[in-house]
Length: 600
Image (cartoon, rainbow, N blue to C red; front, side):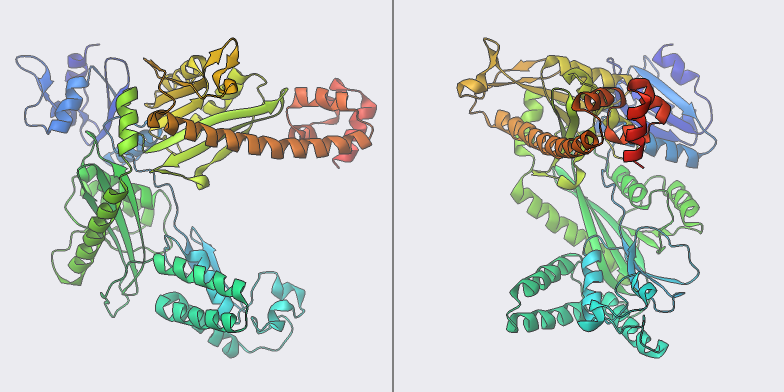
C-alpha cells in the first residue's frame, strides 16, 4: 500500500505510528490520541503529498525522508505513551531522543517496626507498615550510610541480634550491644535520632566526619583518615549548594533542560523537608532530532519508570510541554495518586527552577571546555554515521581451542570508559562467527532493559560486520556498526611485522587510514580495551574450569572425558544441573554416578 493510501485510511483511534525511509530504516516513533488527525497534521496533500509547510525544519527534514508508515492501535492515549516509550528504547529511531539514564536512585530507610531499628539502603518500596525513607540520592548514599554507622552506636549488622553475644563492634564502641546487654528503647532511640539528624543535615554529618578524620590523623591512623577524607568529598559532591531553605517539610522533584549549539543537559534536583538533598544530570548530543519538549518527556518517563517511588513529591519543570496532561495521567497510575506537575511562575518554587537552570548553564560551560564531540564528529563524518557516537559499545571474544569461550562488551561514553556498564558472556559457539553472533544476539535481547548505543564496534572484518547488520535489521533496530581488523600480508597480520595498519569497515566503505591518523587511534583504543576485557574474563574462566576439571580428575573422570562432557553440556554449571540419565548417555553409569556424587 502506498504512503498516501495508508495515511488516508488511518483510524480515529489512539495508537503509535512509525515512519520509515527508503531503506526501511525507522526514522521516528510517535504516539497519538487520534492517529488519523495526528499523522495528517504532518502532511500537505495538494498538489501532491509533501511535508506541511508549517512544520519545523527538523520535522520537515524527517517527513521528506519518509516513504512508508506503520501503526499500532491501542486502547487509550496512556497505552500509546507506554508503547511509544518502550519502542523508542528498543529501536533507537533516528529522529527520537534517547536518554540512556537507566539508573534507579537509592533511598536510605529505617524500618520502625524492628525493636532496634537499623539504617539501610533500598531502591524500591519496602513491604512494611512503618518505614521512614530519605532520598533519593544520586551519589553518596552508601557513604552516608557508612558514616552514620561510623558515628552512631547502632546495631551494625542484621545478623548481630541473632547471635545474642557481644562482638567486635561493641568492643570498638560502635554498637551499644543490645544483643546481650539490657539496652533500653529510650537509650537506643537517642542513637537513632542522631542518625536521622545526620542523614537530614549533611553539614552536621560532614562536620562530625571532619572531627573524626582529625582524630585519626592525630593518632597516626592515616589510612582511616584518608578514607574519611574521600568519603567527605563524595558526600559533598552529591548535592547542589543553595541558600534556598523553605523552613518547612516541603518536598519537590525539579527537572530542567538547557542546551548549547551541540549539547543538551537534563538537571534533576531533589528537595526534601525544605532542603536540597541531591542532584544529578545527563548530557545528550544535539543533532537534527533534538526537540526540547521530547527531552522533558524522556527525562520524566526514564526517572519514574514503572515503579512507585518510596517518596512521591510534586514535580516542578521550567516550561509548559506538549502532552502534559497525558504525562500526569501516566504518572498518576504509577504513583497510585494524582501526580502534580507544574511550571512555577513566582515564589521560592520559581527560585528552585532558576537555581536548576543556572546549574544547567554551568554544566554546559564546563562541558564545552572538555569538548567531547570533536573526534567523534570526525568519526561520524568519515564513516557517514547517523549520529555522533557519544555512547559506543565494543565487542570481542576469546577462547583457546574452543575451551573457556567467552565474549566481552565494553562501553565508551563522552570520552571515557564506563566500566560499570561492561558486560561479559559465557558462550557455547566454538567458531569466531558463531561466538560473535551469540554475543550480539544476547545484547540485542537486552535492548528493552538497556537501550542501544549510538555505535557498535566489532573486532573483526567485513564478514562480522555483515553479521551484525543482519542481526540488527532482523530486529528492526537503527544502529551504526564499524568493524576493525588487522591488515594481513602473506596470511600474517601487519602488526606482526611491527606496524598497526588496521582496516575500518562500514556498511558502504572500507578505510585504510595512515597509522598516525587519530580517528584510527580512537577505534584501536576502543578495540584494544574490549580485547583486554575479553582476555581477562577468559583467563578467569579458564582458571575456574581447570580447577574444576582437576577435581573431577581426582574423582575418576579423565581429562578427555571432561572435554567430551563440556562439548555436550557447554559449561560445568550445565553439567552440574544435568540428570544422571543425561550424563550416562554421554559416558557411562559409573562415571555418571561419580559426577553426581561430586556435585552433591
